[in-house]
Amino acid sequence: MVAAVAASSSFYQVPTSSSSASAKASRGVPPNSLDVRGIVAKAASSPGGMQVKANARAIPKINDTKVGLQTDVEEDAASTAQRTSYDQLPDWSMLLAAIRTIFLAAEKQWTLLDSKTRRPDTLADASGVGKLVENGLVHRQNFSIRSYEIGADQKASIEALMNHFQETSLNHCKCIGLMHGGFGCTPEMTRRNLIWVVTKMLVHVERYPLWGDVVQINTWISSSGKNGMQRDWHVHDRQTGLTIMRGTSVWVMINKHTRRLSKMPEEVRAELAPFFAERDAVLDEDSRKLPKLDDDSAGYVRRGLTPHWNDLDVNQHVNNVKYVGWILEV
Image (tube, rainbow, N blue to C red; front, side, top):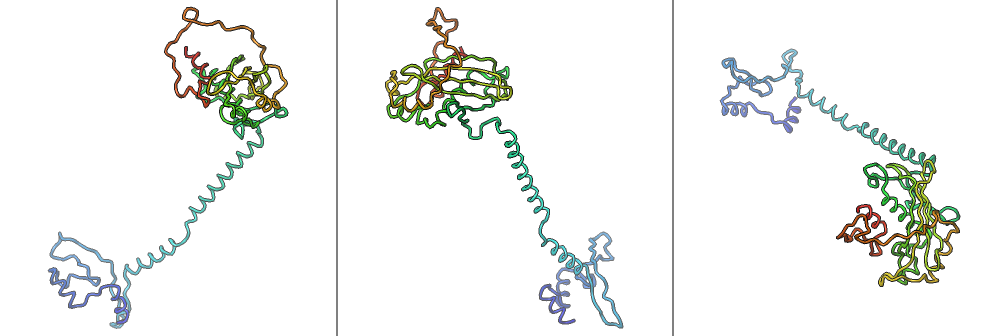
């Protein structure tokens, strides 16, 4: 019994009779007002004072011998130890949540792969630049009509469709390996500081696609005279296969520095010739000439129109699609 008291006194301060008496005397607490746990009990003479309850059990005696003391402190310690043992177990809920997240991600990826297997022609080409068909002479690319390409009527604007023309043309040059600086410039053109400019373009629109429609554009090139190149476009509705739009154009070369027309060098022709398609133009040539407009003959005149920085392309001149936008604004 003495050993138990000595061991517990190393962890808990066990007051002695002299120290307890002196402490009580210094605080003005009568000695008989403390219970077995050293807690002040309610005084009988002060009914309105503070009452402190202590959960303790009287020490049982058998033949005037103390046999043991059990308090709530021991019970709390046992319950705390039990809860601590449970807390040391792994959190299975977090592990199960992580496994569920992994399975959901895998299921999503599998669904995407399965849809691509069943639908090889999706809204956009996997490579983003289209593909070559018909023995590599025709370039094909799909476009989805975006929200920023439509007007108030939810139809694609002619400017947006012309941008699709330009994009397929450049991707065509990229696919056949003739993209070497500038817009569609071949390696020999770059060495000679030559760039392409369009001299004529004829476009016929059957109907304007709606927001969310998917259009498929086929484009190819062919020879046009001694110094020119012809490029055609045929636009279909991806779902119905019906024609939406057709376009044909003629391109020539100018010197990037002098801005003067240039003949097509034989080296450049040798680069382009393997990709010329023996096809007729998608539209018959219109022999009509546009009349020269002035302030008197023009129906609408807008003055003070100057190019802005975003009107220029990589060749440092106003892009042909921008002219279409200017015309629409007038």
